[in-house]
Length: 153
Image (cartoon, rainbow, N blue to C red; front, top):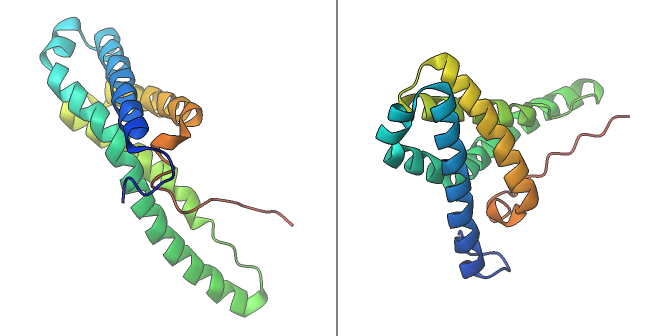
């Protein structure tokens, strides 16, 4: 499933390793700034695991969440269309919110930092992931099959 795209698997693995290292360094620096250097040094292995989970597993989980939300939203939009032809599937737009919450819980419980610092780490990671996935879309295009498009009349 992972290597079904047109690009080579070696290219994907290289970008996966590079993205994991970049995200791990960002997490490490942010934990040093928000918590302490000893906390970051003690949690090096967990930071590396967290970075790998964020780069590889988070897109898979978000795709599954998006698929479920799309099915529920399409059913609700079809019911609305049967009434007055005004239904649209806006439920898919909750997928990034659920992704942020999932990221927040991963940061909180894997690095074991307080909630206020976990929120800042998660927000910064979300921004870095957005930039990283924009620059290297091959990291997530092997997973996503739903395109979120909203048109306004």
